[in-house]
Length: 230
Image (cartoon, rainbow, N blue to C red):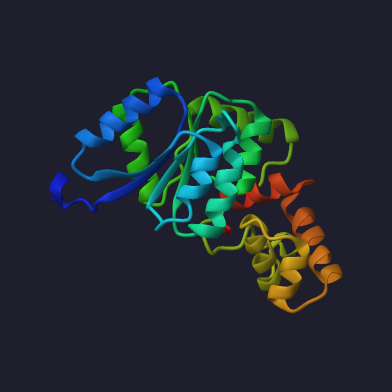
């Protein structure tokens, strides 16, 4: 049986300007035996500079920073710290912020309404490959799917959406394009990486949108993550 001391050490970076929340989470991490806070920033600019250093295992990011949006930090982390799991910790619970964060590359989304101890559990889940999300946000997303009237089946990572319906399966090239889109690459960058034309990339994107029954990049990225396709 695994004891607390057997757990791998989780290196955490924090980008947060709320002093009360900052102190609470820092104290909780310091008191834990399986986490270490190795980077700390209070502004967007400091967060961007922190990404120039060695990557951490987990990055916690607030969205409302004094000099800009934490979404910029999330997007940059996808490029500079690609192996780092990113979790949003914020007071913003509206759909626009949620979708923009997911599009930027966030793996989890928590509202600042929980105890610091519970936050540590969510960090462990994130580090273990999970995607923690506050109940209020999860309910909002589920409502969105119900209102759409055409919920899609959930597939396990690496599986096709519906093997019995060829019109819903994503081809290898479509999955490759989708994966690059979720990492924030533009159509031009994807074209160069895959050695195809921009027009071909756009064709793949349209096919992905059609098969996932979405109409925007943010929705496509969310569907891809929700169904375990990327």
